Every structure is written in structure tokens, then in C-alpha cells.
View 1 (cartoon, each protein chain N blue to C red):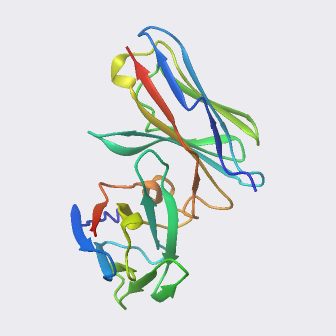
View 2: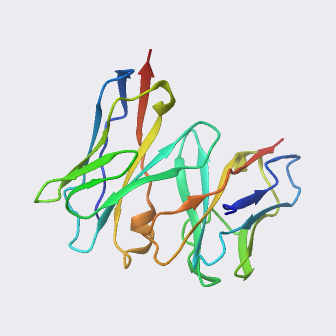
Length: 112
Length: 114
């Protein structure tokens, strides 16, 4: 099973770029990598999903090396409102529960 | 567009009582998921449905928990009888076409069992 490992917490300052790395050494060929953000008292919110190389949207970028054993979520110029917990999930459409395991996530604290 | 709608937002009840949590998924989404979140255990998948059929209920804690999806626009999670250790935030989510597709979460139900 493609278990994911993330740092428990990270600190940053407003305006900085933040990179959160997720390790998934046992990722399978059909697996996608998905990141979610969760604010206190809210449900997780989808940020970005990718399979390989680089994916960018209006919120973040996702970098995936060729071996796909890790991925990095990049948040450009964070603000206080980016303080949240970030989860990395790995799975394919045929992996059922495995694609739905959130793990402990990374708690990002952005300081002024 | 309306997102996933959960009710009630908060529920406080005494142990032994029956609790029913409700969820309306996004129209057109084939998958519906029920999660529970606590400080100790994080976000746990309880059960998920595909086209109203339960696919995996291995995360349901015990027989006191049951979930139904009578139609594509409604699901319930029932706890009977409730216990203090069931206190948590319960989230419902839906996704369009596959279990690994981006999920849309509701605002959750904060359940307190006294």
C-alpha cells in the first residue's frame, strides 16, 4: 500500500514560498497524488492533483519527480490565511479505501 | 452551485440516544463518503457509496453505526445507541466519477455525546 509520510508541522512568514514534501515510496503505476487543505472547523478542500512532472493552478503548484516516490506542494507567497493543515493522498480509481486515507497531514503556521 | 449539505451542524445529546446525521451530496456525483475526525485519530473514512450502493464499510467502528443511501440525493449516518466516545466531527463528501477524484466536503456535524 502506498503509505504517505509528511512533516508534522511547518512554520513560515507572510510573503514566503512554502514547499511541503510528501513521501510515497510504494506508489503504484495507476496512482494519482492529491492534496487537500483544511481550516479549523471546516471540511478539507481540494487543492491540486497530479500524476507526473508539474501541475499548476491558481492556488498552488505540484512537483512530481520522474520516480514519483515523492511530491512537493508549493504555495507561492503565503499569507496568514494559508495557515491550515495540508494532506497528501495517493491512490488510483481502482484502489478504493487506499486513495481515501488522509494521514496526519502537515500543520502550516504562517506568521506575520 | 450548492455544495455538499450536512445537517445538523451541531448535535448535543445524552448517551444511549439515537443520533441521525444527514447529507445531501452534489447533484451528479456518483460517490458519497462519510468521515469522522477527532484529535486522537485524525480524519477516518467510515464508509463510502458508489451509485447508492455501499462499497466499503470496513471503517464503521461497530454495529452501533449504520449508513444508508436510499437515493442519489440523500444519505444518513445513524448511531444507536450513542456513547461519549462517538463525540467527533462527522464529514460527508462526494466526488463525481471515481474514488480518487477530488472530493467535495460538507461543513461537518459536530457531535457531542454527554
